[in-house]
Length: 392
Image 1 (cartoon, rainbow, N blue to C red):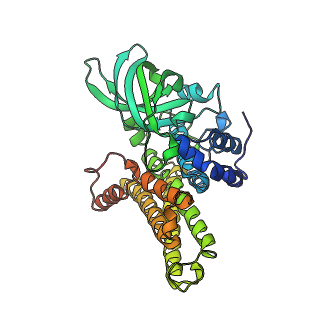
Image 2: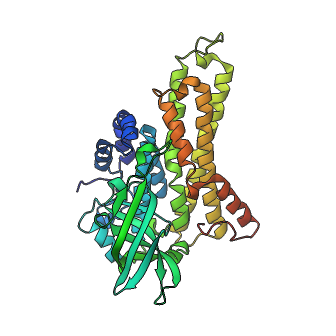
């Protein structure tokens, strides 16, 4: 286990960016993050930010979590996404009881966790726990994880559904099916996890109703990070890679704008064209907007955690809407930048086409959908607390 500190964390991540950029095409071709990326980010501390300090983790703030995945995604969108998803699963694990956390990090403080919410499985009760059989699609980070955090249904003695739960299963007990074939975020390896008659002890199960009502199993109430609200955090982390992709696209187009001309025009370089200047202004404003909304949501989550209080429904709805608006703003900025840069944005040799594809795919994640999030917030402002999604 390497010793890392929060001091200089973002600078260490930024120093890894040349490696991520070098390996971006290979990550896409392999449909999994190149191991050199994983090793470099591990050494920089990128996978420890949501791990409790009790296990040698950094236990950072939600805003720092955004900044880490943003910085990684500036070099490679797929690697940024995997980093974001595995880190948030470490946060989820930190909400579990002490024995479950010991199972994950006690023997291996560098253990990483991947997960899927959907309870696409079946269970049956046995002494001391449940037997689980199921398949979970789109498990981002599963190829680089040691554990899986997956949704399961809990049944009573009459085999009747009682409530959903999240289960921690060691990856030595599951198999991974290669199912991730997509237009963007190709390198995330978000494949399908399979379990067949796997025993999960009771202490490695957390009822979803408790997660949604801010009633966690962790006994360490003094740990600020793990007092943060489950759904707002789960949603917000999806914005981090989008921030990085949008910022990287903006930086790239501005840099090239000093050299590239505009075909069939009298402008020798793009930077001199008022139309290009306006596009850059609009895109930059959207990138700023994405950051402002994402950071506001992070600040709201952290303020409630510091006050040791449960966020109101409207506050949680606003955090989810902030997330959706940040994602939508970042995506639109990249679209504008592709047009500003020109048709060569879509050349296989241009990083712009990969940023565009990655953003378009990642922005469709169900928990971060802008339209759904906006509807939840609008209804919340009108006094409604149901009717759209229980993930608020």
